[in-house]
Image (cartoon, rainbow over all chains, first blue to last red; front, side, top):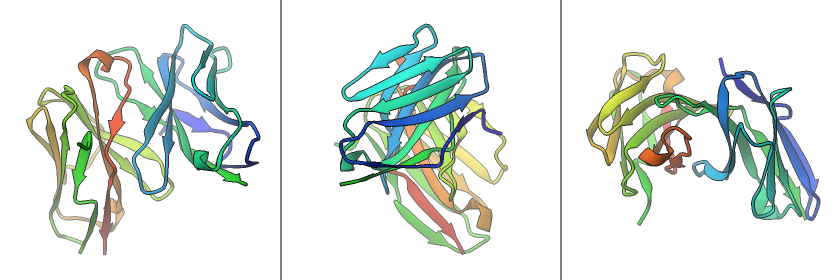
Length: 113
Length: 115
């Protein structure tokens, strides 16, 4: 079975609000984590990543937080826009070469204006 | 100038048929993957090739056979299609430098419908 999961399958927010998407992972050996965004009819697109030696990383309007103690990952989107509506996946990977990214089930973010 | 391209984008076929999905990447990456996304959007790794060599082969029926003629191409052939094979199949690639980090570049997907 999958080792990465998300707390909520759907999240609805108003335009301009901040969004927080959560993810729990179970493999304590994972040391690399990625958030992907998948728009309808398209392939997943990289948003931001973080290594296990960090607990926070910021990008443009997005922040990823990693809490290794409770094996929790979150994606924060500031000032959410309608174009942010998509399915968001967290994914994890061990440090060894030859291991693949393992994806969680995804959270559908709906942004209303 | 599409980075990772898959063909066909849509495929509708009858049970028992054999079909192929092709994937090409022009990013110069060494590693390519096939993922299957089911109706609940769950993405699951199927295969991974590094420079034409199979390195990941998850528990996938023998009816699925990947083929990598060169490091820019990874095709997926499926024999004796079953209803449960209906899904969206994604090809992805990653550069050797990020092989251990795992950032993937995905194609647009190939939606397979088995009737």
